[in-house]
Length: 84
Image (cartoon, rainbow, N blue to C red; front, side):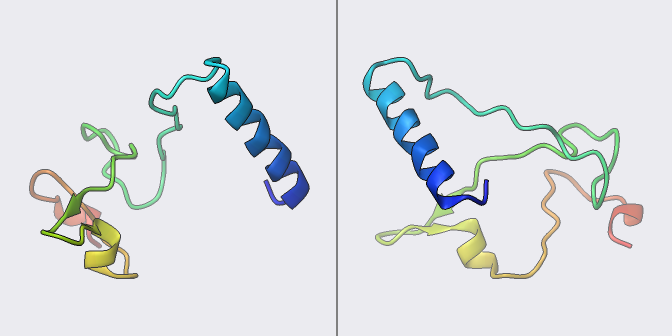
């Protein structure tokens, strides 16, 4: 949404719905990525994941630790075809 007034109206509606108990706070449903730098067919490929936080005292988010570069994040070893 690029219209600031429309975005503000949407935000106000969402805040009112939450205050009235008519809004779920569950996980949002996002479509998975189907192309690009993913290993198609691998478990979890193209899915969103929660951004971890770490540290003592002042917590840091993963993107603050890794910086602005592109990163390939995997649970297991990454097949060579995914990194070329």
